[in-house]
Image (tube, rainbow, N blue to C red; front, side):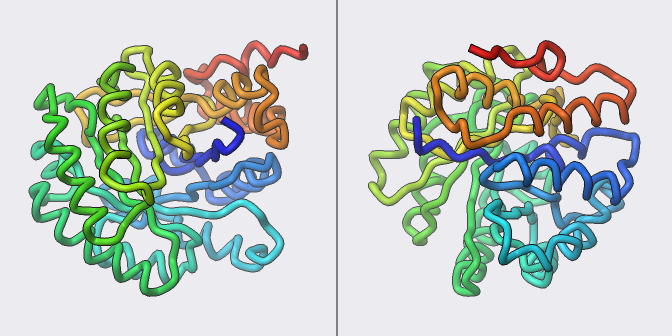
Length: 300
């Protein structure tokens, strides 16, 4: 538990579903507050077509804003890319960590990337190897790993085979993403424990949406089964615009609060993350899915 790393994805996954454009200066303010909180990794955005995801149109600007602070900051800045053009932009932006992946759902894959799972896998593996050769930290993922809003159940064997292809290619930072929020603890245990049997070099990450209320339970099950990198979003914002039912991520401050109750990761400033969620709630003029930003954290 003490090795748990937090990968904050609110500025990317959290905002991509929001129709109200967030000004770049506001994103910069939120980013600075999240970095100051002591989070391990902050995902500034995705290098995607702004026509498809307008909220991500200023990702290049955000990375440019933080370029001069690189040497003095402990928080790594990550991004998401879907194709070679996005990768080129990420490299030019000098992102610390580049995330990319494929969907185990053929329907979701085609809606998200215009490619089949196999087509996307070939390209992603080549991109991941290229990024690694450039000295970049790379994380690959399997999206819709626990189910799909369009197709329903996804074969666990298919998910494991995708991971095996990653591992055979020398790529060992691997995330399973519950894009549709279908995961449940017993399934989480089966998948992650099976993946760890493939290699002792794998570093596991998880990304759960709270569509059906099992997000936090799934996170703790993942931790119990070897996962150390947890992807969460401030305020519980989020959702994939290319899935059937979009719902928020596991909430960063809710998860951090739960760790603090067990005297873990007390180096992360909970109040600073809560302040971002309150800021975002006021900006969007709505209540966010998270809980602790509304209740405040327990002090004992």
